[in-house]
Length: 116
Length: 114
Image (cartoon, rainbow over all chains, first blue to last red; front, side, top):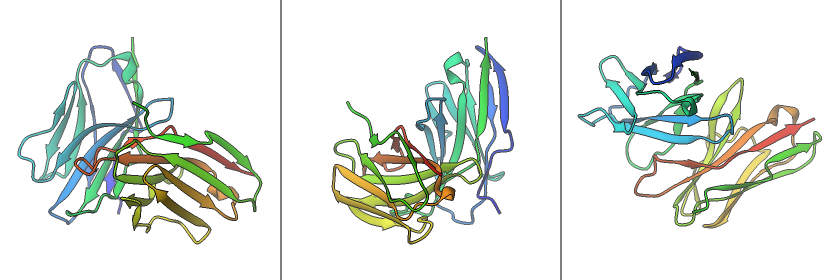
């Protein structure tokens, strides 16, 4: 079974609108972390946001927020007030276990296009 | 501040040749990660180091792949001999021990093996 599932290969949004990118995960470990990365056409991966499994509140970083629903095993990324520069591939990732395990497993990604 | 530096940016080589990819992490970072990205398999972690010591190399596909980190400012990923299926973009990333999950990626090396 895939550990990270991103069901939306592509998404379109109008500039200034909000968009939600879906991510579901599969783990039996009670300690884990969830991440979102952005990959623009230039190719490099950019860290956006992190949510720990024990965090009580949803993570937020500027226009990015992570809608963490533990029971549903979902960690959707919400981008508010979309900008043209948000057009990129977005990857959800997970780290399982505590301690010093920093191995990330990535989903296949969602290509977001922001229209003017 | 300089980010993660990778070289070369593009590499084209023939099957059977040795390929060496290089990475300079961000100064002061304690962790270094090597990833491979392909259309078929997505982004996969190959190996990561903590303070120059390899911690997890379970993602290294086979013995043809090897990685070293002789000091805190330099790492190499070597493929010998290379095969067409090794064609991919290889990323290096680094992070601080305080925030190991916040990984800073380099621009990647696009490897084509013909």
